[in-house]
Length: 588
Image: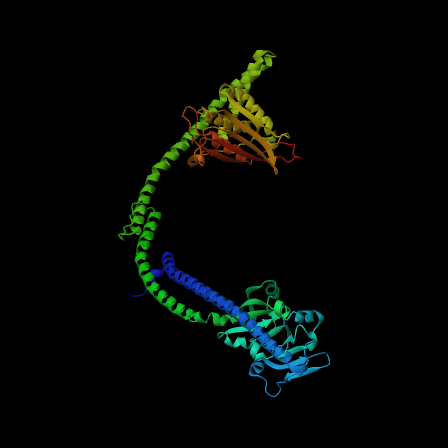
């Protein structure tokens, strides 16, 4: 297969190729990362378990050695106590092998003035306090540990020669470092040991030149009997496990803290070659994906070029051009859809003709409205003359009602005309509560005849806006008549229309809600379209909601719909509240 870069001239080809590359890198990287984290977690868990076991083993071994030392001193005390007339014995020349292994020196102290060395020499022996003497009289030993910043700590053990006769004195022995701290020699390679007390005084450490107070979480270590922590020392990071060894009951010394540590490098040494293996696998995967992706890109480039040429011809007006693709895949289906689209574009010409006819009908309707308004003007003039002649009585009321109907019809015709072109209505200071009252008085009889309950909840302070009263009456009458029609088929329960007005954050809100049939979700977005209606032809033209939207637009207001089939519909109208300082009319 000959490699050429012509196949990568299109963006789609480059995206497909990039997708193939990513489809190789991401799974391999994810698998490598998951494997790395899993193995790393296992190695860390194994190291923690090993440190826990070794810390426990060191604690047991250290306690056993202290007990052996205590037993050795007890036997030595018995030997001294059995001498005739209290004559002291001495091992200065040839001490027993057991004593030499465990102690560097042993002395017999009978009082503050007499101290006899059994072997070796004790420098600065510990002073026994009164509470410690009580502990000795119970037949138990005293343990003293003195830290040494420059070397390993000095450890002493003290025991009464005879607990029943304290006056015979005590045995003071300095424990050999190699015997007591030699327990660290049996640790597995790589595990470091540190023994300290609660005051962070280090008695033994296989890690040189470090300060526990500065690198260890001492509050955590001293607060709990055991646990684990992580810390840094120099260029190394260590994972540690600590365990507390309590000594107070038998040796009067509070406790020792045994800490086992292992460096991060040693724990994760087993996965040091993982990166190299990953790079080899990633390189091989990328090479294979490159050749596979290149072949696929070449196969997909040709159909894309055919579609692009077909698009350019259709853009030039050649709607009869067909895209011929025989790839046996989705591109072939795409070509079929493309050809179908070109046929639909041709069909759209007939729709444009129909639209032109509708435009002509709209112009004729505008002329018809003009013809209707002329006789309405005459009727209005005659009614005004009759009103001037008729001063009172039932006839005048009927003439006034007829005059109001004529004015309303004139307003409807004007708003129908303003649906397609902005008019110049005067915007005045309007109370929406008053507008609603006027509309409800006109429709009250119709609602009562159908037994529809009107629940009005006006705000105590009438909200006021800048608006056209007649146009607003048209908005609310259309909404209420829609609710009226929505309740027509309701046979179960009460028929209720609720109207609420209130203000919030500089806005005047009107809610019109019914419990009628509701509006399906699939047509909710089309109810404001002109000539869209779900009513019978004799009941509606489909212009009501479109006129509402047009009027609200001139009032800088919005309308929101919430509806559920079988539950009801709620329209929420939001108007900008009138500035309290504005009392004059304005042109919209």
